[in-house]
Every structure is written in structure tokens, then in C-alpha cells.
Image 1 (tube, helix red, strand yellow):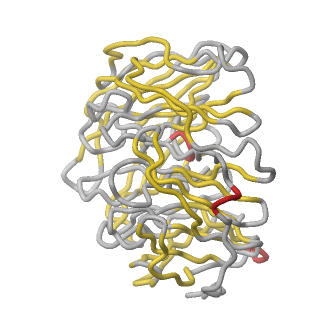
Image 2 (tube, rainbow, N blue to C red):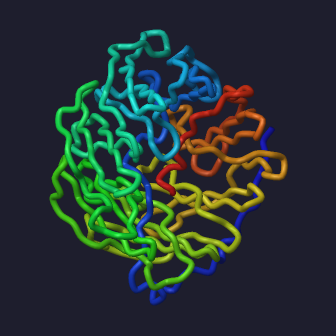
Length: 391
């Protein structure tokens, strides 16, 4: 069932450096991209029924190593997947499950390895509620203790609060930088810009101007503007990858015409900047580490589904090649870059509009294997993997 994608020619038109006096930050979150439901640390597949029933599959490549029900509470939905990330509230390396009622009441299951290739419940209980009129922005480790924290925002005022979590308990809670004093801004991500293990907070105005707060728990240790493109029409932030593998999140922006520009960051300071792969008609859809070299790579995708990966070293593309692709015209779309085999780098998964799901195991831009993954039956949704550091 292998399909090949169109390979983009090596000759690409890039943004001239002089075109960007200041440029825009991108919304990667310093969060767990995919759920971990076993000690092998492979990415899991989790599906949820509209009625609340949730089921997980611990993967070993494209095979299911273990599986089981995770929650079955009517009227509740899982607080994970996509841009929210997958929380590990107790720092044991295994994802936990948080469910929320329409009233905002939240309940968490702390999960542990069950010794049989799946998980069991270690502890469970209520955690801080989501107040009426507020939303969960995401799970991010603001204090660097290994436990993911909860970040909430008032939908009207933009006031933002965080609960620093220690298992089921909030060890500390308080206001963190948000929107109240910054009209026209929105929170776009929680990257670790200074590489100290604490997630930071980046906000961006509707004009593209961006500002970052380097966090130490609930306190701001430093702050300042970060690259943005307020005067460059047609550009938008596309992610916070770590292009040079130094542990500091970097910033990438892309023009609607396809051209892209990267900024290597050290806190709120740009150490280097320059064009990165970007082609007319293609959008950057993610920054997974395809070759397991500890630096983010760049994946471009055409609206027709053709997908190409660029293996990066800082701002330089070392090589590129087609990634396995399934045609959009046939009802398929890529849903993320999990690591299904925990051996080489990130993999790529495609899903049909009918729920059929197929994965390709990657080593760089080459496929080492492929196969069907657990399908989302009618009424179910795959709680997808964040598209690796991309908005």
C-alpha cells in the first residue's frame, strides 16, 4: 500500500534576508505530542466515542502491543489531543487521562504501566475545575519538575491562570502572562525558548507582533519581544521547532506564497536567522525529528496530499525526499507525526474521512514499514497527535 509523493526540486526560491526586518514567532507548544501508554515509550492510539467511551492502543510499530478501555463516563470528553497535548501529571513518563464535564468539572486518572504492555489506574480524583467562561489552553511544564501543568484562560478578558500540578493536586496556582494588558493579542504557545526545561509563554498581536515571557513556575524570569512580521504582509507564524538541536525552541514564519524564514533563538534573543525550505503551493505542516538527530526537521505538504521532508541542521537542509502520502482526493489527510516504533525518528499517519487509519514507519525520509492502525469506527474520533511543533 506504499504510495510515493512528488519530490520537490532542490532549487527553491527563498525569502531574501532583507525582506524581514522583524519576523513572527510560531506556536509550537512545549507539550507531549502523543500519548504514551506503556514503558516502551512508543506513541499510542486513543479513540473516543461522542458519548464519552475512550479506548487506547499501545503500539509496537504498526502492531498493537496492548489495549484497553481508558474511560467510559457519559457527558465527559477527554482533555487531550491536538494542540492541548497529552498531560503527564505525576511525571512517571506515562500519559494520564483527564476528562471534563460540560459544567467544567474535571477528573483525572493517573496511569501506570500494568506489566502487560498496557496501563492501569494508579490513582484518580478531581482536579481544578475550568470556571464558566474559561477554556483550557494546554498542558505545559512551567516549573520544569517533570509534571505537566494546567493553563486556563478567560474567554472574554484573556486573563490567564496556571495550576502547577503534582499528581492530582495543584501545588500552587496563580496568574501568568495573558491578554488583559495587551489588547489584540492571543496566546500562541508554550515553547521552551531558553532551554532550561521550563515552558515559556508567547503572545502575538493580530498584526503579527510577538512577545515572550520566560517562565519559572508562575513567575516571569525575563521577557521581551521575539521575531515577528508586523510589517510583512502575508506572513504567519507556523511553529517553534528546535532546528539546531540545542534545546532552545526556535521560530519559523511562512508567507502565503510558500516562502519560509527561520530564527534560531536563545531566550528572547535571535542568534541566527535565514531562509528555510518553503515552496509555492506547499504549507509547512510540522517539524518532527525524522532522523532522530535531536533537531527538528521540516515537512511540507501540497493541498493534494503530496508530502516532502527536509532533514535540517540549523537553518540548512542536509537532504530532502518524498514521504509516503495518500491522496486528499481519495479522502485522506495526514493526522500527525507520532513515534510508533521508538527506534528511528518520527513516523507519519494518514486517516480516511471514514476513520480508516494507516501508518508509515520512517527513518529519515525513507519508509521502513507500513500498515493499518486501529480505526476510528462510526461515532468515534482519533484523539490526534499534535503536528510536531506546528500551528
